[in-house]
Length: 86
Length: 159
Image 1 (cartoon, rainbow over the protein chains, first blue to last red):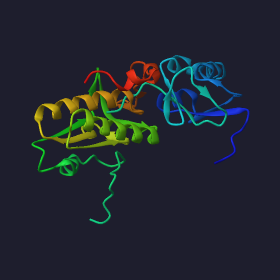
Image 2: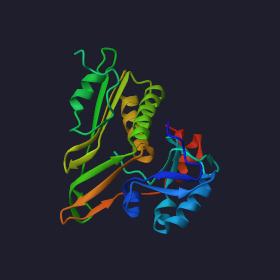
Image 3: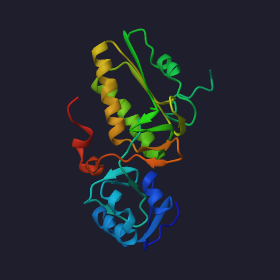
Image 4: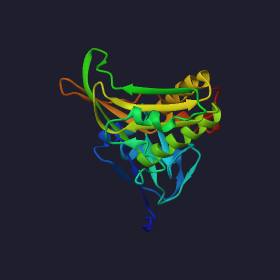
């Protein structure tokens, strides 16, 4: 396991979210907080993600997380925009 | 075949092989065998689609498909079930997904296919990008995902 940074969080992006950001991931300043806090931090750092972010789920360690869930630094986090498989 | 994997890949980057899935779920105690094949539509609205590009959060999608398969087998008392979803470029008219299942009874088998497809389309982290004939590319992000994290209600519900 790589040693997680104590002050940043890298968030994986997919599909239209990655397209909006122009990157497969973004890194934000993070010292801990809830999923709801993370949504806010992401929106401030990347305002153009906001409309899709508001309709997206957040996955922590490969599982969909409620907005109240705490996200530790070094967590594996992904934004899951509305899915369209099948 | 000694090289055959006991846990077949559910996410593939080659054409979906529905017939093979059907053979995989065949069982002498199952009287109903269903193969559902979802293909990419050529028409969405007014523009012609040349194909769809599928992307996934692969570890999550593989885990979700496996969990849904197990849940479908329990919920509908299926004999066996196999799912394959294609990723990457899928030309119009080709299969993006196949669900094969076997059951002692027809009714449960049909209900299970419908239930599985609904769940896959609602919660498995796979996305399609529609490529139009005039070079357009658009990711499909219908609806709202914030409900999926709400807890047991997101994975329960009536069958």
